[in-house]
Amino acid sequence: MATKMVTEKEVYVRRLFSRIARRYDLMNTLLSFNLDKYWRRVAVEEARLKKGDQALDVCCGTGMLTLGLAQAVYPHGKVVGLDFCPEMLEVAKVNLARSPYGRIIELVEGNAVALPFEDNTFDCATIAFALRNVPDIEKTLREMQRVVRPGGRVISLELAKPSGRFFKQLYYLYFNYLVPLIGRLAVGDKDPYSYLPRSLKDFPHQEEILKLFTRIGLKQVNYRELTGGIVAIHVGVKI
Image 1 (cartoon, rainbow, N blue to C red):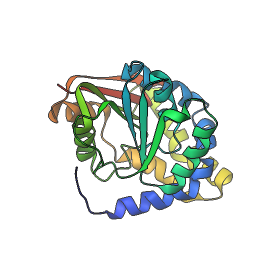
Image 2: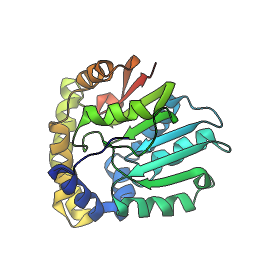
Image 3: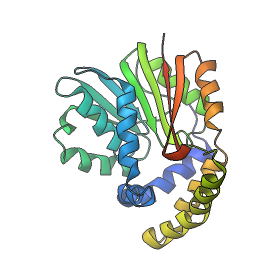
Image 4: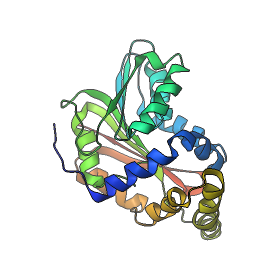
């Protein structure tokens, strides 16, 4: 298991998400026009989990993808949701309590770059809308690869950078200007939803993430763009 030192970015991101935890799910649905549920369903399909499998959801937040994974392995499997923000995990506990799949989920407070699990523990490891937020993308993916069994899958569901000229311009207009405005009006705090477009600006293009998956040794690497390329799902298999 890895050890680490907390970075300035982690402190900032933890504080940011602690402020919006209780409205996080509502804002995701609102800002994505309810497409976030569809994106997570596709990510669960890409995991190719079987009944009885064990899965890890890294940076699980409020547990929405975690619940989708649990549904796939129910009733005899297990899913662990890990996040470093206690406020997000508190909301996740409420979400799990409302679902029949919550009983096979364990929530753990921990960090993506130092996963507190033994090698070769899970059949799949996922991370959704959080790879932009970690202090070290490669280290996070290596940790996910480490804890997955041979033949298991590492999956990232993340915002991406669309390539179509007209759609790209329309998307960035919405993302860079309207999203912060909507976030400020809905949450009363401009910082979290101003951070969102900044985080995507600094995040590598989906082709670069594909190369990173390959560089760390994952095989059968591919990615799939959804909704005009505003979201991408990357998949790699541990051999």
